Figure 1 (cartoon, rainbow, N blue to C red):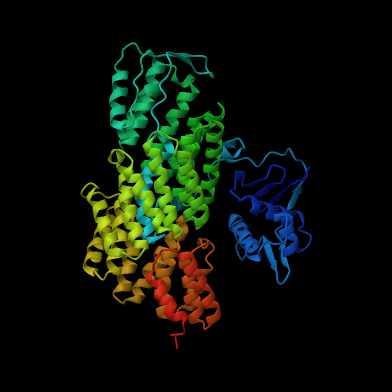
Figure 2 (tube, rainbow, N blue to C red):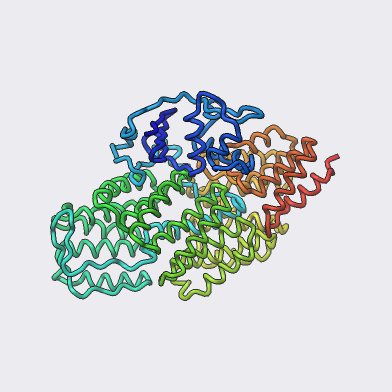
Length: 626
């Protein structure tokens, strides 16, 4: 049997096609895994491009660019730096594995121990430890900046509460009421509850009323009461009332003998994990999640277990650990597949589509969103169907398919009772603005975003509001309405003064304002701060690159721009704005043939999207920089 390999904290398990980092699973695509395995197994020599292509793809008619992209993704998975390379490029030949590698021949060897001796399978791997400073920065993950950033921020912020709810599943399915005599298999204790259970409706407040009525029954046994209390806690989270949810969890865990029911204990810990996420304390959320995970893993596959994995994936994404997020989400999808829960699978696929978009993998994001919609079509829950359409609309925008995006939004709006899910309603209103902005119709976008803001509580200081205000600053500057942009900027400044988590959008807005006023010195300083914060939180994006690049080009700082273009943490795959910046940079360097090629690629990738950078780049590439 093929051996295992260890290098720089990684363990490559060829037989089981697994890669671990410090005992925890590392997300890696199948072809990238094959490239890694082949290079490691033939590390004694340089491997030619043709040989590697034939070994991995099974044929030789694969473009060199495909191999180069796989190598680039491999380097990102391995977190390769110039000072610590894993793969050496051999000019005019191919690649060679150069990292110090240990060959481990025992195929049954267990992976290195993860935190708190968690079992080694991917669903149970603990998230990698983060420093206190990075944890604070991680809470700002959702503050992604631009159209995939400034404009994308507002959608990500507006979607954040919805995704947080959907990760738990309670927003889309009624509580599973206990049977009159159900037994916990791990304890043998019978939970006797009334024969007549409330047929919990889809609207959370109706469900809360029905659960409260059920809890008024004095004949309930402690186990049955605890289960109903946890179901009501989940509904409290749906209506954004974490205080009431925590009170119900406390009451449930105070029931006699409840500690002997691992299923209910796991559910209580999972709900506390959700409350901690909503409260912005990811380290506490992680602790509750790991404790719940240990209990769920002892009980096998279940929808509750899958919900926790989905939530852990959402939490990792919010902290900027996008590859880690994909690993959790893939584990959740596999479990939902095993339990044949298409509704849960659709919700996981929708979240995965957003995560892939954040990584710049826009084509993959669109394909995943389509899968989510296919799974959701047969579901009775309109919330699940709307959620899949929202994911499809966002992925369509990122791929320049604005007509498809608008159709998805209108189909979602046509579903009944959209206003009963306020987070989805806000997302749909915001999406209409993003579609207009992506097409260069900024006045129409402003109207849509004004409507979205009008449906948020007055004086609200939330992620959704911060994102929308930043998007309005961007759009207002594009139509020349500086006073309106300045007004929204002042609101963002006030939010940042009240809470540090709102500083990133305020700093980016400050950079945009300074650039619009012609103060490139201040603009560059603000952009540098915003760039550093986005790099730390894993939310670098191409719109920020385009805006920052314009300032640097005006200042003649080509070396700085060259560094930004080579930023390892910047998602560049399929990015039309990245290609536009590249075209402008090459034109300023006098490399006009290369600049024209980059511009042609950008136009193809842009699709139906319009950016003023298209016109700027077109002039510069045409040779007007004389």
